[in-house]
Length: 214
Image (tube, rainbow, N blue to C red; front, side, top):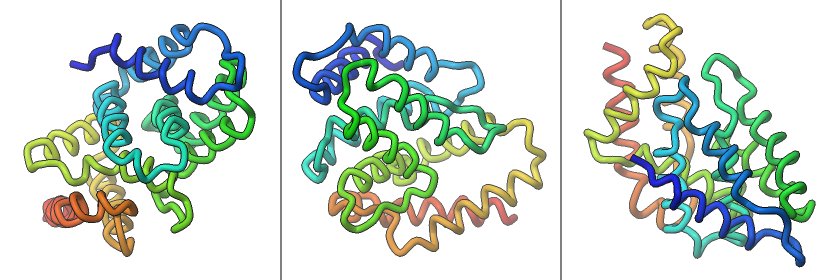
């Protein structure tokens, strides 16, 4: 069970670090709005548990980031809008950040960077000279390197989120995503991700793809 008070504190720290001189309004309403979104009933995997995990992974990878607090804000917003039946979730999440962060006191360049990072999670394919994108994408994909039981739980939760998709169509769509990921030269772009997560993630993806094809 995620610790909501701890999450509120983590959001406030990231927001205050990213703000312009002079600060801004109380972070609590912004944190509460985001936490309410992350607890919506249509979610099974994309919940506060996933948010906490991504934030934890950003903490692990923060030495590779150019601005770790901007990456943390992007983690908060990256699935803030999530409806499995829609295809524009990342774009709508980025627009939410573009509306909320200036009001909360974040300068325009940092707001733009948060929105760019959120949009990058459509492809999880950051450029070689994009350290913040690499950290966010690695943190978001780290579940792929989970131990077998946790990976199985993740795939089951994703299936429940897409309960409205018939089995055959889900297998085709999920298989296409897995192949797209496996075709990437590297799943993880940070040195830590490559060393600690790459091999296990590829093993998990290949195993899931084999199960979907039988």
